[in-house]
Image (cartoon, rainbow, N blue to C red; front, side, top):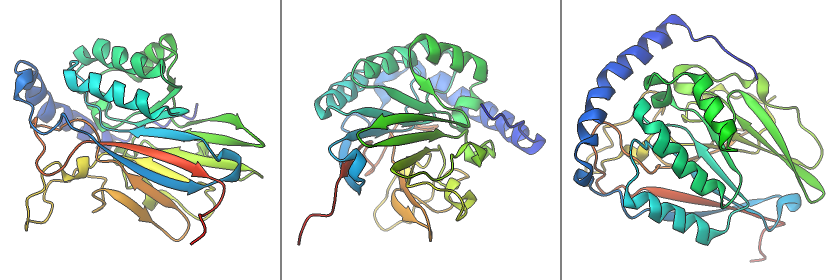
Length: 282
């Protein structure tokens, strides 16, 4: 694992983020029925060309914010099961407070029964005060692949899938040295929590697709009003597809909530990635 020591500004932001968010989450944990607009996730489908992965599919989830299990989490598990993915990728913000660890790993274990699960961390995972070593220990115990500035390789047909997971870019914890060099018949997928990862990439980084979350899609979408709630690290990327000259990024709206337990005109999202051999004929 490539470890990066957080700078003092990032440590200050982590402390402030923890101080601001913890009272909200602890308060609303007492009123689980107050959630609004979180129980009907939208399934979005995305197609990418890769002959060696043709016929495979993955589910991308983000921003779980699991502090206690709700009926909506059972819906997510059943929905993912029906989608029959080969892999499940989760891009951070797993929980908010340490008490969320047991329900979080019960939820992840249910997903792990469906397909291998690959996870990376987000800013709220650091705000929670849970040590990285504890996430690592629990992930190992539950056979979840936690990638913190690490990569792993999955043979697939005549090629391989490289899954890279970096620590939270919005807290400047991402270390891109873990991205492997290009290789023949290798598809490289990068998991990162925040969309500003796209601004950190350069031409030398051989990444085919970046998956992230963090934005919650704005969480509240008021008709006629520009999106006004975006956390640092989004750089204006609210949801959906974004590109640079070399890289493609997808921003998932996530499943959970931040600070206030409701979404407005902004449904939670389960993204499905389908790999195909070639473009369909017109």
